[in-house]
Image (cartoon, rainbow, N blue to C red):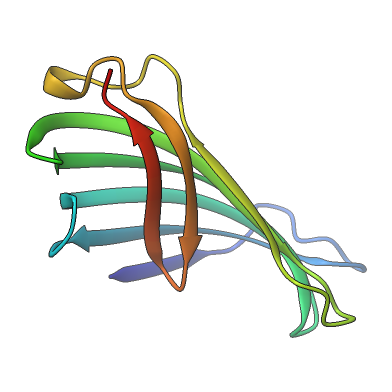
Length: 120
């Protein structure tokens, strides 16, 4: 996986630190074989609290079917050590090729994309 951070165009002078990054991932050994490019926005307050939002374009084979699709995902980490809140979904209508009509939800756990999907 690669991670290329970039400066926020106009960094805030106070409050949360804002960031953006492009990530590139490879998937192998499970239902998903392929790669993705992620555009991510983030906001952080110190080391323990923050949030991110991302769009991820995935290309490859899912459960033996080839095509592309887009997932949106995000998470919020809480400073008081409450559990992180994460969410994600396949963007409706984004599936191409044999993945046209793909629907489902997802979570990103330690950089891995976990999908709960319906191939129709």
